[in-house]
Length: 324
Image (cartoon, rainbow, N blue to C red; front, side, top):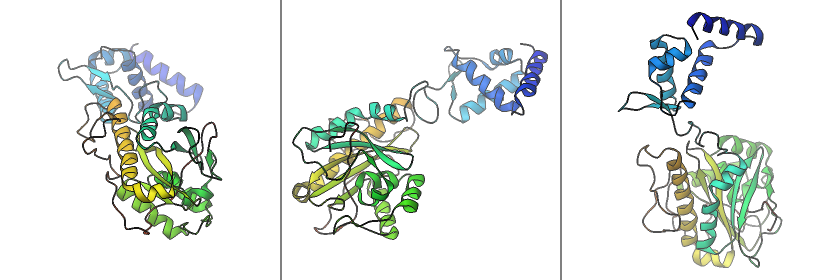
């Protein structure tokens, strides 16, 4: 397409669809051309296809590289589409929707159950509530009474799975603080906005949330956030455990959940950005050896607490096929 015909095309689009950003249109067209050129494009090739000058083509390519959509091959000098867009999931894949998250973290959820033999949950925020996407656990494991697969904001202050998400999601935290009533479900429930904010700060510092019988007596829960390749919280992995076992095994259980969540975050990141920095340790989820490095902002190690102290909160639960 010549420059003149390109300009006429732009004028036609503007006339038929209303105002638009010409530079934005050119950048998207360049992105489209890169996507349809698996061998990459040199600036002069892109210029010819766009009907633009070589310098304009280079500016467009530099912009796409700077924003994470493309990269320059140092050996050949051509520009190629990045393996995945900046938001994390591979091109054409549904990485951040419910099905994509459930598929991505299915092995991690299985690993939490394999290590602990306790009911394990995978959950994420959807609109103003937390929805449990999947569960692992055998029949006969105790179920948390009163917990549904869709957890409203009114219960979030008493649930580890909700706190693990709210700690790293400003939007969801604001929803909970605006809509939540901070009801006291048991004698151990932490109530009040100030106490809730303190709980979330502890989650950010340690990388996990706890419930010590705050939602239902006799049940304790542990949850840890999982980050997508863009560093945003995508889900939380959690388990529920009888209070008696929690009192004796809380530290290894916490470490199991934190380690699996950290490894899942890192493996997800490396599947999209395999050559970007050292990051956390890549390791088999089942390995369990060495010290995994928690992707920021959570830290990686569970810390021992004196009996009777409360730093975190609550259970997690629900299921895509309710089996609580």
